[in-house]
Image (cartoon, rainbow, N blue to C red; front, side, top):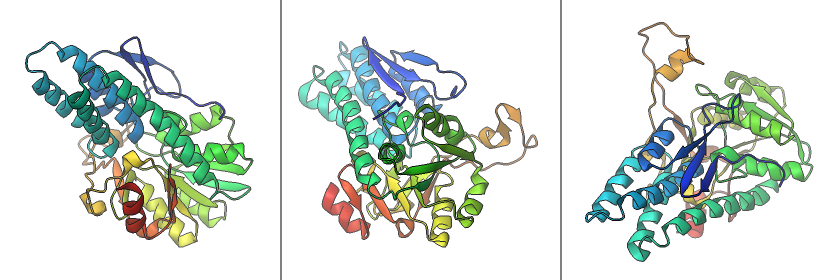
Length: 338
């Protein structure tokens, strides 16, 4: 499996999160014993990536239960804690999936199994990532040059990664010639996190600016595109980091296969299509500033959606822990994940 970083640890009744706002310059772990602080960590992207957010929320539920276990209004207190955590970020469905699973656990079994449930969610995510890595690697040709966007690696999950899990497995099989990592403005998850993971794992990587991807494709330097996913609708439309939709359009134009890799916890069959996915709007300071330096004029208006929605028509296939799904996605998703 090789080296990969971890972003989440549960030790001695405390949650530890690798502060991803400091990478790659500083590796700093933060300790959490209050679920409210975990919610703030999710909001400020100390921890980020759909699966990792869900795992952090599961552990935060354990912290909330321990805080409120002796209160007469325990169910109401847990409901309030769930609301606080659910409000941290709206797009990634793993957050709500994990919170609902933890709620069912304490309602059914009481507090005794709550910590074990959170640990299970964490462990299961790693297992799903490794399974989708094996499934997705079969799509990767020998000598592949792969383009990826944002960070869908070990840092965004319980470990190993979704899109980067596929890349890791394919690299271990000797198939990967080069990985191109988009920098991913405005918060540079591709530059700060994906390139960092790949360098640490000795996988060849070239860091490019977001606006270079189309020209790179036109030069014949990209064989396939693999990205992660924060929420997939029942028809295969999916939300991922802003800029993903543009890559899908470019890949379609250049005849390049375009894949997304995701665990079943990221699939939301309750919504029919991508128009129902809530898209998080973040502070305009992230656009008007760069590394703490004002790059836009004071008072300029900004627009900063954290995600965009890619129509399923632009997808070549969906990579999951249960295998690779090809069109029609609505039928395959309904069959595999109901």
